[in-house]
Image (cartoon, rainbow, N blue to C red):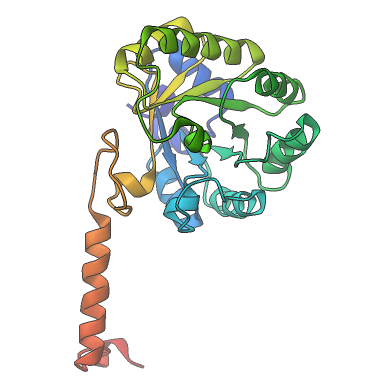
Length: 278
C-alpha cells in the first residue's frame, strides 16, 4: 500500500502533515518513524516513504559520541535539523528539544521551540514529560502554531532520576499515572505521544484511550506507530542493544570490512589502478 492510499505518483508528491498523522490513527494505518541527523540518511529515509523523521537528541550518543543525551545543545540540534530538512521532500520532520532547552522558563522554551520551525525548518517539536509546567508549555506552543509530539515512559533526559534504563509503568499505580499523563498531553494539544520502554499491554491501553496517535519505542505492537533509532536498526551503534531495537541490517560490519579492504589495497599498491586514474 502506498502512503495514505495514494497512487505511486501522488505518494511521491505528497508532503506528510500533522493532519495525515492523526488521520492515520483514525483509519487504522500504522505510522512509521525513524531518526536522522544528517542529509544523506534523511534523504534515504524520505525516499523509503517513512512518515516521520525525528531529529532525536539520541544523536548526542550516535553521532556526537556523548555518553548520554544530556550534553546535547540547542545549537547542535538546530545544526543537525537543518541538514535533515535539506534531505527531505515528503516526510514530516520533528525536532527533539534537548535537555534544559525547555525546563528553565516557559518564555525561553517557546523561543527555542520556535527556532526549530523558523530557523531549522522542522514542522514540529518533541519534548519529554508531562509535569504541570510542560503541559502549560504544550498549550502555549500549540496555541501559536507549533505542533508538539509528547514523550512518556522512559524519558532519557531524566535518566539520572530514574537511575537506569528500566521498564517504566511496570505496576498498576505507575501505569495509571502514565495514562493520566497521556490524556493530559492530549488535552493540552499534543498531536502524538512517544511511549518508550513500557509493558506492551499498557501501550495498548493508552493507545485505545487517546484520539491522538501513540508511537512506540519499546511500547509494544498495539501502539499506533513505531519508531527506532536508525543507528540501532542498521547495526551502527554497538555500545548497547535495546531489546526493542530490531537489527534490520549490519551496516557497521559492512563499513568496517570496506574500510579494512581500502587500507589493505592502498598499502599493497592495489589501489588506485589504471581504472581509477586519469
